[in-house]
Length: 125
Image (cartoon, rainbow, N blue to C red; front, side, top):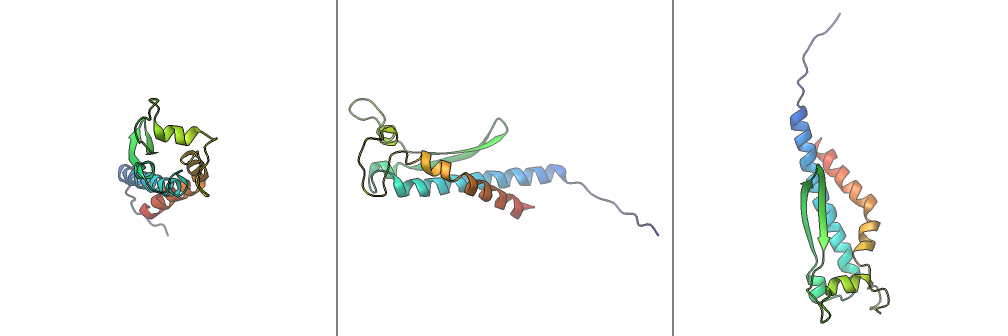
């Protein structure tokens, strides 16, 4: 005995739902990176830490992108204070505080970020 039936393909809706989940996931990943960066930013309280923000996510060239930044303005030499603090490995910081306060948490979060995005997609499907 054979059965017949029909299948409705909702590919356009499915792709849109997955893209929306990717966008949510990247936003949550950016929030996670900011939280981790705030734990090691050179000055625990103050302008530098308070300037931390996550941006996006947005779709750029077909990719979902997010960003995390710190911006405090230029120092007396015209250099961005946040960049100087991030890049200068010779500065002495309090215990648990460090240069590369954004780069290190971002690099450490790759697996977690992928899991966050995957979780959002799985919830959608």
